[in-house]
Length: 137
Image 1 (cartoon, helix red, strand yellow):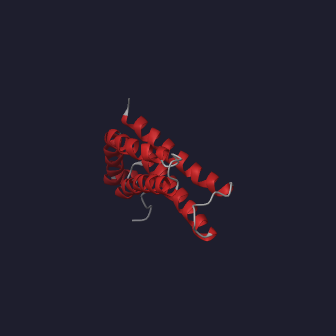
Image 2: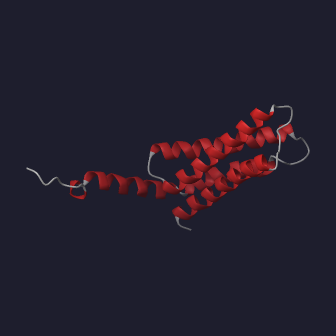
Image 3: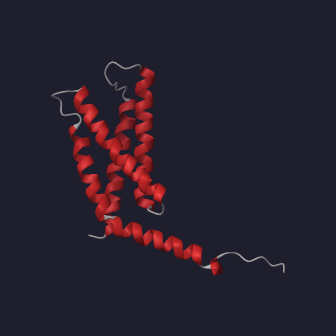
């Protein structure tokens, strides 16, 4: 499979996690013993992190995109642990824990696509011919 396909699979996983956070908020899901404001904040921040990671793993251009993917993976792992602790015996955190194991594998397998994307961006910056020229001398 091509490295870009691994990145696309990771993007789908991040997007699914973001969809979970949005759906959790829409249906009124609450994290136990917290205020409503905290619950809304957690879901919104998680959705933003995971959507940013989904876009970053697709774009693959900068170090900031790499950091966004790293933060998204860490958020997945932490959310899986906290969801498991908050709901013992329900298995609610298992999908996030599994995703946190799969996402690093996908990120490593997509690494050649990251290098190719960064070299393409560097080549565009290095060629002054691609820049617009002024007509005055």
